[in-house]
Image (cartoon, rainbow, N blue to C red; front, side, top):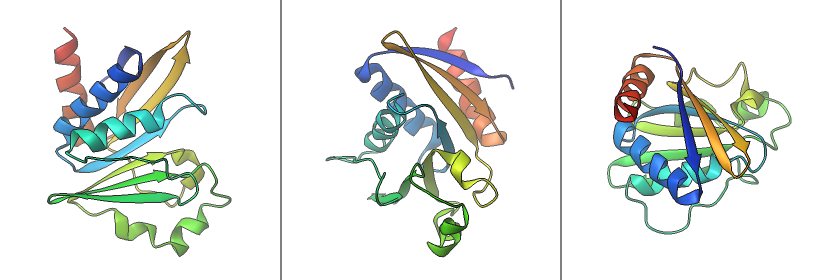
Length: 156
């Protein structure tokens, strides 16, 4: 499966894409979110979490590293590794316990956890372009391939 590229304009469109990804993932899997500060990683995460049914604030876990959400039977763990000094810190916080088959893990700044984090199902890179966003979605396994195929079909 090749990379799926999407162009998003505005916060509402990013939240809507998040809701669509929530439906596709059904609350399971691992998504890596790459992009500069302010690119929209947390906004996309907010759309996914709300798309799964969460009502209320979705805050950036910049200082806590992880924010857990229990939405019905769905467990979502939203990570922001921007302030991580060393990937080994993840071992001390019991990172492996978060990656269960029935959970969804959203990881901002995954490059800071290289060597400790499990492989992603979907790798998303967000780039800001004059008020809009360009998203490159790269599947990293069967789950990611099925999600990208569904998104690509919707774009036709």
